[in-house]
Length: 309
Image (cartoon, rainbow, N blue to C red; front, side, top):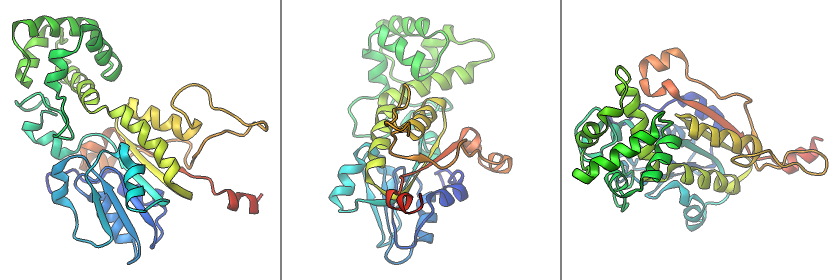
């Protein structure tokens, strides 16, 4: 477990979940198991924790605890598998989005610009399409849209054209191949930032991360009990925007819908107006926390609300 990241914003996550000793909770991003371990410590003997992770490496971190069940699936299948385990409704759901330190630090996974390795980037290594497949087969327009939207790359058009030209000479198979091919597009002094944006775009595309996130958020609202909590940590603006809009408006874009009386029609109510950010000491101790934003929402308890109106 040492090669996995320390759990980010751990105390705030546990407070946000508002854990009941005999409740049922879900950690949809198990990874190294840091958050899961802390949740189990707060559960009583009748409490339950289900954890999702599509990465086979995460299974090595599963605790031998009868209250714990690991589901080796993408969290976009949250509802189906909770139904399979007869676990609906649940008291709380935690999502710590993004890539684990273990994935970044394993060269052959291809997530990091720091190492030489294959252009892979699949979180589920049984998935068919790798980063190399995307780079070598996508049309120029698709590449431009991908880099522009998912990576917010300034010269996305030039980058896409450069890649299409380079792959005619030889397929792009390794991180070194990609770096060499796109070197003319990189601004001097901004190499690390540029490559990080390119890799982010590729990773989101390969793993369909934003689509999976949308599906998980909608299903989370369905499977939570009234009064149940959804706690989400995001690490870049594309993820955070989806989480924020869903919690505040009940949808991912456009204006919120209202009922006849002007009340917002949304399945969850935000607990905090603004995201919770890590303290400076946590950032010093854990670099991964630097860009973290934590948002918490609760499913309205209609019976409680009616009694207290």
